[in-house]
Length: 278
Image (tube, rainbow, N blue to C red; front, side, top):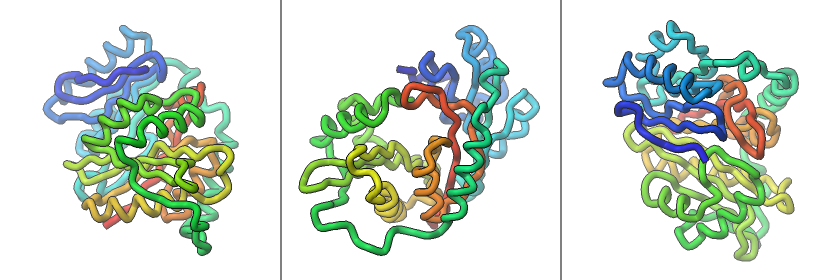
């Protein structure tokens, strides 16, 4: 599993599993020295990509340092400052998106369903959507293990799920007759008032019931009440279902992160979608 640590006073994740450095939270006090430190670390470790999430007021420095802009979200931080997702590549193989045509078809299909919303028919009474609790962690980890062979964060670990519940992630689940069958999470940046809607997993036996879009609608409502301004997701680009889910609820596609994330055993490209909640 890749590790999370500080580089200067900025937050990064890095490791062999994703073969990358992810600049998760840039502290502007580290600029511009952090650019050289990221390059040095990538070369020392032999990583093939740096993935960086950068406030738009620092974007020009990254552009002139060999980073490619892959997605942008306006008004991301506190409804004011935008964010730019950058990639810097250290191998042609990592930069080459072999399934670009398939990904574009999925984006087009998702956009065709934009704004359709939650299905009008209500869920059967045997289903219930609620916020998950620490007591649910073991069952949640079991579902994540069944759905994802690998994942960029340790959601297979009940301890990780319980610890993140205490700090900055709200998890939501769908129960059928009391048994958990689907999950998702809302990872909040309290300071920046933005939230990543992520970690969607539905047991194979329960797919086709629109559980993900219903979970997302419930999560949006909760996040509005928590004062979040912007919601976004980094969705598997080859997952038609997830891209359609976000488009149905009015999220806007803003770009593809090339060969970005190790999920279900392979490094995959990811699509970024966003929506303003307030």
